[in-house]
Amino acid sequence: MSITVTDPDSRLREERVRMPEPSETPDTQIWVHERLPGFHRWPEAPARLAFLADRHRHVFDVRVFVRVGHADRDVEFFALAEDVRKWWGAGERECGNASCEALAHQLGDHLISSGLAVSSVQVAVDGEGGAVADWPMP
Image (cartoon, rainbow, N blue to C red; front, side, top):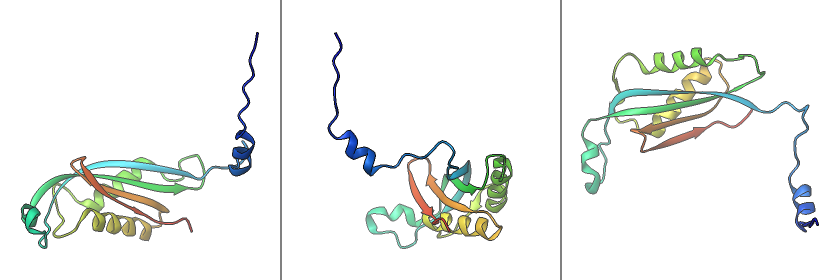
């Protein structure tokens, strides 16, 4: 004996969500992740976070997402990772007063100025929290 269950909302879901055709080209991105040591400070930190006003060290987790035009190494991720490391510099970077947000903006702008179609840059500290900067698709 078989039982057929009909989902009354399935027709509505089909109308609301257009499924892509197999022949459609998806929006494709590549990404890299680098763990980079550095120092920064927040001079205007409120009293309850006063320790952040002093120079302190983090391992910054940096992820960069770049749109690509085809599926055969339009941008090679080893080259992208090297570009990120070169921007950061050798060893521990002195970031001054730059926040995770500011670092994400700076790196994204740098990579965009070199001709890459950056979609997102994420910068986090010690794997605990961070910022995401997104650039809209042109």
